[in-house]
Image (cartoon, rainbow, N blue to C red):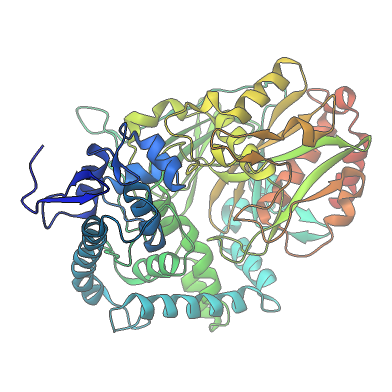
Length: 566
């Protein structure tokens, strides 16, 4: 360990060494962890888990600080108190050293940012380079888009444009026509509903990496800036035009928390001769890559609304194409060009459980602050197929997580049971997914034959071209559902059944399935949730795995039949 030239600081008879001068925040933080600084004394040493618990953040957050992330400013005081004690007049030199390192790192990042923003600035973005200006512009722009999305006639216009654009592939006489544009109470929704094989409870899936001439290559996902701990943002130099503006909008409006989180993007859906989903292939991507290739499509539609018809049509038609190929007696469905389009594989489910003796489900209303479909009603769980880890993890760290069932269970725990340990940013340290309290609770219910998952099929939302692998979760508890999913987390907090999380505008609402047809009449349902209801109805009607007979779901079948009656 290098001895600090800055000398030593004494308080209470205990000596702590000052770190070398002019180090960045990560180096200074590492110094004090290695020095075992604890409440102004030399403690027993810090592990990242213990330190994370002491300052009230996740282990992943601390690992990020030790690389390149910066904590929020209000966290510096907590870190100083943990290292140097509660008395602000003790170890003043050390407190000043910690804060100076933070300011130095923040200023260095900001200095690197300015030229990139200036050189790539759009006419619609502010010319003055400051976080305040960019944030103000992003929020104003976001409000304009909200007004357009909720303008009278927008939803009908949007769906008409999509039906026109995809008419050749999805028209009434086309092969995929019967699976497209389901009508909920007579109103068509822009989705394709491809059924799953109801007889099979599991199905195979694999990763397909882009191939070179000589070998199979893994992508190096593109990295993007993050505002989580710093005002500095540096965008990739080759990002320009519409995508640059949208990236600025999403990040500076606070829509995206983890832009570099690794997920799995669809390469191809594999269908049999009846267009039943058999399998799929995928590759890795970052969440921001998905945002700039797929989420941006919703933004483009919103921007086109109100334009002259020929201009709007030109903008709408600038979309990735759907490709349907024939092979081995079946078909393959892919989206856009490999390497240019990253449709994030996602999961969703209709959750059924008994409440007061009757079957119930859950619905929510999404917040205004989410990247896609704000204020829309939907069924939880629903979310992207992302890893259980950090933005610093690479494929080698997470390849064993390519399992839709794990992704679905994590989303269920996070959104329905408020299990923060199951989220990507949960305070779980290096605990394997299988050892999470919530995952163990599900495993116990599965072993007792009380937690069932059925694959219903895939809903492809034509607005963002995002594939939602759709499931039915049936829970037959021997006690109230809240008792099954109320438990203490590894972090010390508690899981609670149906407690709001960050993506929900208000508390999740239980709904008796016998009343689902009434709830479905409410406006602004998320397209993917409409597709989920359609697939559930098809599965119940077909009776291929005896859902009605086994679970007594006649009320659900009747309610969904009312929703989709012609």
